[in-house]
Image (cartoon, rainbow, N blue to C red):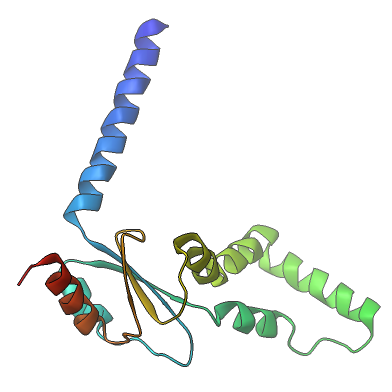
Length: 148
């Protein structure tokens, strides 16, 4: 039993170490934006070795509008229609869609962002505001770090 626990602990430590190595080997960028500020240069920055996730603060609004499209005016009928839509899509899938749609809002709060667009490096360690071209954002980040 003790050997089993040690083996699990070793596997867990190995897994955590491999995640840490991956995190340091691949720089990570999260972009918080909205429909008003389209982001460019994502593929170019990815080719430079960055992992990039772009979150649109308007995604939640779009999801609610999509799900609520063509609902009856009667409240009881609208409730039934929504329940049917959620059942057809699957409750877990709907929950996942909402979580993804509001991820940008959650991250903005978590990182204490004060405006957008925001280019966030290494889980909030550095933030560049007002940049929509990721190539420019990466160049500013590298200058700040003293890299060429």
